[in-house]
Length: 317
Image (cartoon, rainbow, N blue to C red; front, side, top):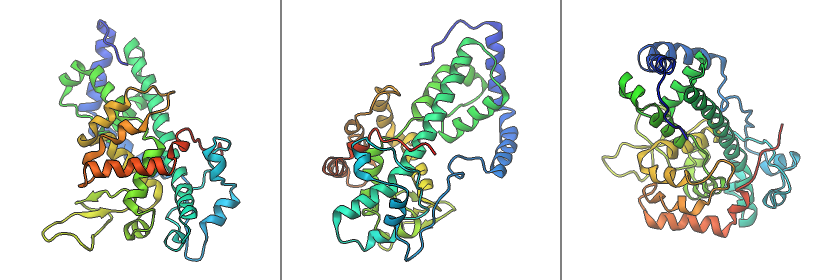
């Protein structure tokens, strides 16, 4: 994607300035910029309007009111209504009909999964434009510098120092582009189903812990009842379903254990459907079950025909 060209004096000046912004002036300026941005509450995730489900409220009725038709969506005859629940429906723990339970689970999870992917796509398009500007030696705005610095931090792309950045500009930005990419909806749905017991587990119902992520630091965490003696991990929880989805995708896009997933994903263009099964095969490290876990995810995808959702799109609001 990013090709090196012979450096002109203008290009060298641009690269040096970028490096200074990132690695010298960046920490203080970026911190202030982040504070201001957080005060404005401009994060796409936090700006999503979530519907809090209380006991006695039925998600199935709410979904029907928005015209949610899972069968039409499967056939690619209808877009996905932008219905975002804060928490999982309580009906999931009470519905006896497996088909209805699964349809409710998919209907609950699909909108936030598609939304986070749309945000990633938007960021990816912006990154490509900035890379093109740098390649052509065109002026990059201050806000674009800050945006790049923020994304390098978010996606954990390591830059050692100024010389490292100027020497590896193309490599660093290519690494960011590789990490900043979508997770196929069918994979996100299958892992959520497996890790949350189809939305019925205590962690999922009480803490939106949908993907079995662990935490050891500060923040929301639920202690597993059967945690081994001497272990200190907790199940990471979230204030909303979409925050859980966002954290899950960021986990796959940054952690070393999923580097092969990211490499296999690179084979697919942005306008090309991703073949999900080769990606699933790289997830032996996601669970202590190893290869058996991979087979479980594959089976969920196949048996529930989750490839039907590979091209699903959110309805334009």
